[in-house]
Each structure stands twice: as structure tokens, then as C-alpha cells.
Image 1 (tube, rainbow, N blue to C red):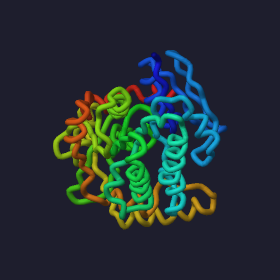
Image 2: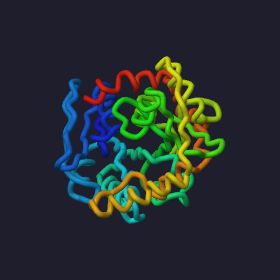
Image 3: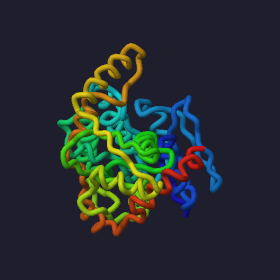
Image 4: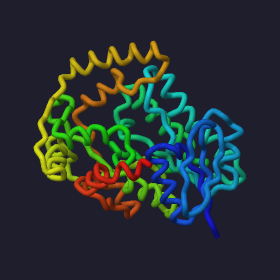
Length: 314
């Protein structure tokens, strides 16, 4: 019997990769999109697009009607105030959860959280992602759910790390000056495989799990620069950006964003996240309960990101 899954955030970087995997795997897919969003096309089988938003109860009920599971990938990553993030990352989870519980049989709920939720005091974004997790924790006796906390996700079509890697490929590494900063990474296809594992196995215990590409102790910027240099056959020169200078740039960026009426990506909260020295994942529990293992090393993921990105973004 064909299984049906609902997906939010389906037109985003991770959502598009997930839809490809779902349609290739024979899932029947219902996907939420905003009215103005461009819907990707998939050759394997059609997708039922539901127009609406996370604050539209009617569209959420329609999205979840008759589905076996929901994968919640939508999230707010741009903004200044806590309210801008909470409206999506906390209340959006609550609204989707309410729609799930309104079904005759509540679908399994798989939420894409963030490693930032581990440090909610750093930024409004981090706090909002933790609040979204707490919404799920409050529903532990009413439906089955899993939340995944990935670190920085990269791959073809990525708009955050890809520009940084492309600049490194040209010989310049412009990174924050943070002493002994370490962080984990995960290639987008490995994250999608983890989400698929949540859908395919009903015996994974409810909980919040960290996952990464398995590199012990995470990475330093020097590790990233060496890998880019090896892939591109050229030297990479470090241009360390002092945090005070980054903060000054952020101040101007926030002011311009307010004048233009847009939500900025680079904010004081984001600087605090960048300055945090430890974004290393511990994926041991996730591996134990799921049997999932990453397939892509950073070297291979970087190769696919740098040299396949143009094709994947089409």
C-alpha cells in the first residue's frame, strides 16, 4: 500500500532534496507552499501542492488529511526580534501539531530542528527553535514524534555556506576570528537519508537527536581551508574578520533592513552564534537507535557542492 507524507518547507534547500528522495522512494507526497512560491517539478511522480501558510488552520488540516506522517522542514532563519522567529519556529510547530492531532489518526511527526536549539540564550533564532522542540515535548503522550538537530547543512543549491566555499575556491577564506572554534557539518543528502529513516522505521524512540557527518571532534576553519585547497588545487589565504568589525557591519545591515522593510540574515544574534566556540554534534545516540550512518565525507560533499551546484540549482 502506498504511503502518504506531508512536507512543509518543501520549496527550500532541504525540502527540495527531501521531495526528490520521497518521490524516488514511491511515497505519495502532499507539500505546503506559499501562493507565490515556485513549485519544483519531479519526474518520478506528481506532488499534491497545498497552498497556504503555517498560520492558516484550514490549509494545514487539508495538508495533513489522510497522511501517514508529516516532515516539518519549514522555519524562519531571518529576522531581528524574537516575535519574528517565534511566529514560525514555535507557533508554526504548535499550529501544525494541532492539525495533526485533529486527524482521526494522528500522523507521525518528524521535525527538523537545529543544533542552535542547544544554546537558546545565544539568539532569538536559537531560542525559537528550542521553543519549537518544547511544543513537541508537551505532546509526547498524544502522538509519535522525532526532532533532528543537524549542524550546518551544505550541498548544491545552498545559499549560506556555498558562497563561503566558492570564495575559498577563489583563494580567499573570509571567516570570523574565533579562537579554537569547532563545528560539525552534514551534507544535505545525508540529512535527507536521516529524515527518510525516520519515516521508514516506526521503532525509533521519540526524542531529540543530533547528527553530523561523523568527523571526530568536528572541524576547524583550517580543516575546511585545506580541503578546499586540495579540491581546487590552489592555496587558500585566511582573512580573519574581527568580531568587532563584524558587529559594526551587522549594525549597518540591520539599519538598512529596517529602512527597506526586510528581515536580515546577519544580526547581532547571528554574530553570537558565529562566535560560539563549540558547535560539535554528538550523533552516537541517533546512530544507535536508527542504524543510520553518513555516506558523505566533507571532501566528497564539497566536491559535489562546488562542482555540481550549478546543475542542481537549475
